[in-house]
Image (cartoon, rainbow, N blue to C red; front, side, top):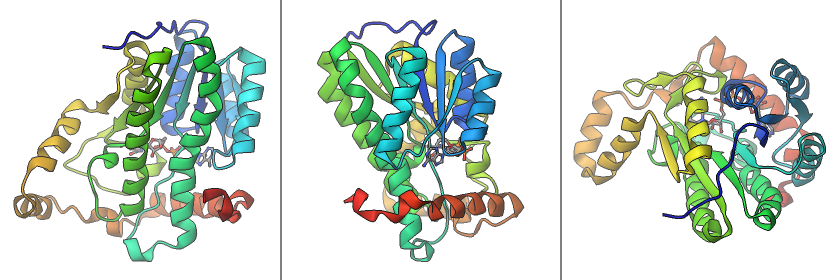
Length: 288
Ligand SMILES: NC(=O)c1ccc[n+]([C@@H]2O[C@H](COP(=O)([O-])OP(=O)(O)OC[C@H]3O[C@@H](n4cnc5c(N)ncnc54)[C@H](O)[C@@H]3O)[C@@H](O)[C@H]2O)c1
């Protein structure tokens, strides 16, 4: 087992992307309560400042798709709180629908936010962490990074990517004292999953994910599934022959993310449509 220099949360400089609401807000709130100096970066800069003010942290404008915006966030956060001890790459989007119905622009946004956003953040903070010989990056992936779901194909692809990215970089940096780990939530009660019935998978509270992020920092675990038994279930599913698995999938009506539509879902999709229009996503060369 690799030994990582411990990170004392009290006084630690912690950056949380997408921390204005949802899981990121719960993470920021929990870590601030443990004494961490928290910087929240979010596309919704006003909400980031409001959320941060309530927990004694700082709020910043951030678009994780844009490496320059991410670099500015790190500079501002370090000016306020000192060198980064922990980066929580949490910002993410989850448009749903049949694979052929999602536009190229939507698919690019998913990959830019969920994958490149994480890569940008890691490339920015790892050099300093490696130089100091300590630090932790916690990537909020998903159990959708292990379990394929109809209606979420490109989201699945993005989260499988984050799981692989985390595992490979964890190996690569293990000897430097810097750890990289992932938290893999099942469904969580936030805007992102609104209007989609994932049952029999449980929908947990954002606080449960915040608890796992704290454990990721203190134990430096490679992967933490929330709840744990759903993580174990993905292993069983991967070992089950496809015909048997398909019977179970039909029984639990596993196609509900294909058709999810209600007022909350519509409001979430409208938020994503605005994000998709954003100038940064109109520069596809950044992806390539
Ligand atoms: N909610 C779930 O069921 C669930 C399950 C598994 C994993 N996750 C993951 O958890 C993370 C957080 O999701 P959530 O449920 O809290 O979502 P959310 O929509 O409630 O909050 C996401 C936050 O990220 C911000 N954001 C979006 N794009 C951004 C960008 N380009 N730059 C900066 N900030 C941006 C949004 O403004 C928002 O404040 C995501 O990575 C998501 O994939 C969520």
